[in-house]
Image (tube, rainbow, N blue to C red; front, top):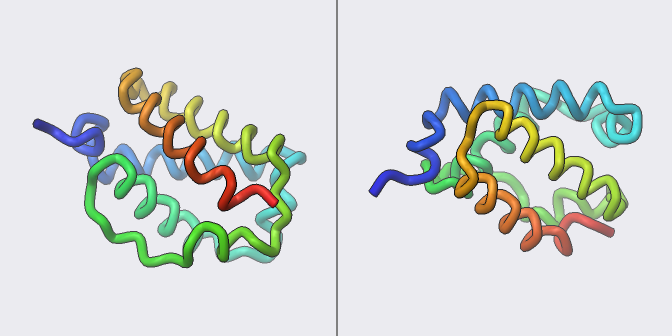
Length: 117
């Protein structure tokens, strides 16, 4: 059986999703402050690796644990939900099927406590 990663188009699709996600996040004044002074290329590589892994692709994520990576940011639940909505919207815009969207929503729900705070 194909992984969700393979079904969406693998690395190229994940790359397109990550690029579109960060364009959206950086253009939103409610969120762009979180990215001030951040190495966006590095962050996008981490996000791409994490998203790939979540979807059953290569397990190449080598970043910090999500709690440690977000601890100093004091991310609000509203902002976490907004980022999640952008991610799901970007994936839906790339014609990702409902099963993939449901899997991403499930992961977002599971990591909320590690990021919000």
